[in-house]
Structures are given as C-alpha cells and as structure tokens.
Amino acid sequence: MVPPAKKFINNPNDVVTEFIEGLVETYPGLQYLGGLPEIKVVLRADVSAANYDKVAVISGGGSGHEPAQAGYVGEGMLTAAICGDVFASPPVDSILAGIRAVTGPKGCLLVVTNYTGDRLNFGLAAEQAKTEGFEIETVIVGDDCALPPPLGIAGRRGLAGTILVHKVAGAAAAAGLSLAEVAAEAKHASEMVGTMGVALSVCALPGQVTSDRLGPEKMELGLGVHGEPGAAVVDIQPVEAVVSHVLQQILSPETNYVPITRGSSVVLMVNGLGGTPLMELMIAAGKAVPKLQLEYGLAVDRVYTGSFMTSLDMAGFSISIMKADQSMLERLDAPTKATSWPVGTDGSRPPAKIPVPLPFRSTKNEESLCRPQELSHQGKILEAAIEAAATVVINLKDSLNEWDGKVGDGDCGSTMCRGATAILEDMKKYYPLNDAAETVSEIGSSIRRVMGGTSGIIYNLLCKAAYAELKANVQSETTPKHWSEALKSSISAVSKYGGATAGYRTMLDALIPASKVLEEKLSAREDPIAAFVLSAEAATAGAESTIHMKAQAGRSSYVSAEILASIPDPGAMAVAAWYSAAARAVKEQSQGF
Image (spheres, rainbow, N blue to C red):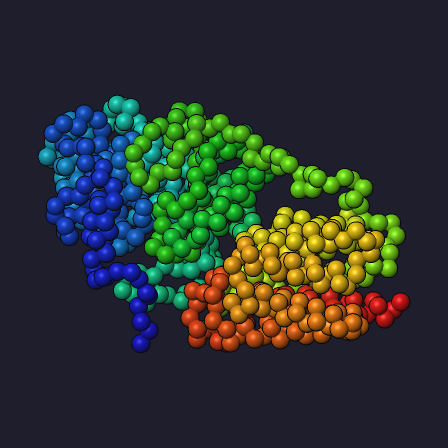
C-alpha cells in the first residue's frame, strides 16, 4: 500500500482549523470567528458590522491555496475571508457568518472564483443575506485562458488574477466608494485579466497519496489550481519557451479573452503554485517582461512575483496579465495592511542594470593584460599546464556534483567548472604567460569574477598567496623551488583564514601531501619534473584518503559519518585532478624540448 504524502501536520482533517489559528497568532490585525471548526472565517480585527462605514469586501473558497484568500484580509483589501476545507467550497453558514460579522450599512461585495461550488454556496448565502436586510453585490472572476472558450455553463476557472481583483475592490472600498461603484470597478478588473498555469507536478493533499499522473520528463499546460487536468501534457521545456507559450495563449486574438492590444499598459503577475522556488519564479518574470515589451508592444507598468494563490505543494507557476489604466494602477498602488500583498511601487522604474563601479583589473596597466605575441619556453609550459588543469576540471563537473550532492550542497562541479571555463577564456586574451607571478594573479582574478561561495574565495586566497611568494622572487625565471614555496604559502593562507588543516576532510588533504613530497624531492635534488609527478600522486592519494576522514570543516561536517564513509571529499578530488593534469602536461611539454 502506498503511504500518504509526507506533511508537517497533525490530523489531516484539522489542517485548515490549525492554519487559521496559526495565522491569527502570527498577525495581530486578524481574528477568526469562534465557530471553529464548522465556521472558518478570518476577518479584520478592527472591523465589526456595528461600526463599519465602508463597503465590506469578502472572498473565499477552498483552502490549500494559501496565502489566498485569508492572507489578503486587511485594510485596503479584503474585510473577511471564508475558508472551506482543502479544495472544497465553504458552506453557506460560514459565508453568512462572515457577512453578518463585517457588513455595515454600506453593504458587502462578494468576490467569487468561478467554480460551481463557490458560485452556488456564495450565491445562496447572498440571497439569504439580502432577506436579512444586507445590501449584497457579487462579482464572479473567471480569468483562465488555458482552455478553449467553453460551450457549456461552467465558464472559465478563477485563478490567480482574482488577487488583483481583490486589490482593486479593496482599494475602491477603502476610498469610500458606494457598493455599486466598488462592484463596478471589481467587475471591470475581472474582465481585464487573463491567467494560465503550468506545472511539473500535481499537488499532494493532506492524508492522501500523491498522484503520479505526470511522468518524470513531463509537464502540464493549463491545469487548474486544484490539480485538475489542463490543456495538454508535454515534454519539459526551458522556461523561456514555456513563458512564450503562456503569453501567446493569454494574448491570443483568436480567443480574445482579454482586450489587450499593442500599445496597452499591463500589469504582470508571476504566481508560484506552492512548490516552485522564488529563483525560478524570478527567472520566469525576467523572461516575460521583455517579451511583453518587445514582441507584443505592451507597457509593463507593474510586476508582482511570488506565491499569491497556490495549489498546496504543486511545482508550477501561473502568469496573469491585466490591462491597467491609470485609475486601476492607483488602486493597485493604494496602501494596504493585507499581510500577503507584495510591497508596492509607485511605478517609477530606474534602469534595471548599471555599470560595475570599478573594473576587476583596475590596478593593471593595459600592456600587462595582453597575451604575449611570442611565448617563452616557460610560458609555453605554463600555458599547457593551465589548459590541462582547467580542462580536466570541466570534464569532472558531473562527478563532482554527484559527490557533493551526497556530502554538501551539490554544486562543487558547477562552481569549479565556471572557474575553469573563465580561466581558459581569459588565458587566450590577456594572461601574461611569460610572467608566472602575474599569470597566477590573473587566474585569481578570473576565479574571483565567476566563482562564488567558499570555493571561489579559497582559490582566490591560493592565488593571492602564491602571487605574493612568486613576486618576491627577483630572478628573471621562476624555478621549481619558487613554485614549491608558492604552494606552501598558499596552503598556509587557506589554513589561516579557513581554519582547516590536514585531516579535516578538505582540499588541503590533497594539497598538503603534494607540497610535502614536492619539497622533499626538490631538497634531495631530484629531477623537478619527476618531483612534480610524484607530488601529484601524493595529491591523489591524499584526496582518496578523505573517504576515511571525519569532516571537521565545511558543509560536510553536518553530514553523518555513514554517508561520508562512502564518498571522498569533492574539493580534494578536484584538487587532485587539476594538479595531476598539470603535472602530466608539464612532463609532456618538457619532453618535447
């Protein structure tokens, strides 16, 4: 029997009640009605029907879409939110309780997403409230653009564009408009917005088994926020292609779902469906804005990116596009205390990109940043060593990532590959290869520019210390002894600032044995090339020995000993690889002369 999806919950039947309790504990400006668990209503703490002199704006629906709708309760947005069970419309009694709790003499607007259950329950509650003397208006939001225009009575589904309607309605109500005026603005906003969603996975309901409807290499276009099937299941595509398809569907002149034409001003909302990292949402937003501007000729006046109406833990996102004139932009920019509405903007947009204040190589003259027209004997050997070392790191990318995924954060190979690629590119342009010290400095500059995290700074330290040692050499040619001293200085610098030493399961467990062997062999006046090769063997042995070490530095120190006992340290293995490749290249070059 397949177990239910893993969740941080207690009883699956209590998730909505416990969510509401946690919500009001977190935000003092919110309250809930005391009828839990049957009556699940979140409302503004500063509003009561007896003294409220503005139009109440109420929305709601099934739970599982958090922060919608309860997260939008607050001055300037919703007055109350009615919460149903997960993916289930709230009952009439809950809706009536909410209406009675917050509706004053100016009446109440119900903003309802276009699902049959919501329409029926909110509709019946509205009719009952009217018999009790309340002034009620209802706006149905159906902003889905994924499916062809429906032939039946179901209509388009209500999706994340509903949140924009909430904001317009709430701002209009806060401005003191009448019920008819608030309803008119909300209805107009609902007619101006279109939405389409895409997903890599379906959601997992509390206490239930997760559906495997989508295979590992598939994605779904146009699915609903309850996980209901969409327009098509297709192979996973790059996000730029997905964004293009979604925009084309929303803005299609054939369906004419939204009256947006070239020259219109629009608002863009990129909405996460619960399991999509903010990084991926921002990537989608970054691709959508220039496409709207350049391909569709639209002025993108506001961009909202985040998780606004989710589907539990679904990995996916939706895009909403709303045609917005100046009055609507003013409603969107109006202040609100709703906890989940994003921090607004007045619309002024400075340039997205400005120049870097200082060049990365500001202290070097132009001549020193040029590759020599003719390489010396030493320059040729140095070039071959650098090229071999960088190439082997690039080829080792996937293995390093795999090892690091088990004992670290999984990006060692990618980070090292970025550095190695930059080194190869920069070497062709301006490494002064006939000057060993300056070349080492330039390698550090390349690394600093593209390698982030701990690896980047450690390798930059290595290069800085080696450069200082080599620069202190006043002789015209750098000898093997100088290189050995430079390696020792590099190790000392990393140990000093990083805190690690031999046996800590780090890159030093490859470098330290290599340095010792190199120094010993050179002191014994053995052949420098042979000494380099033997020190590379020591680096490899040291890196492989890390599999038996207890991690005392870096992210590996948080990993259990059982896992570490099967994987060598990725950083040490990377060192062994590039060091050995450099030694082989030096040997081959030397034999060629």
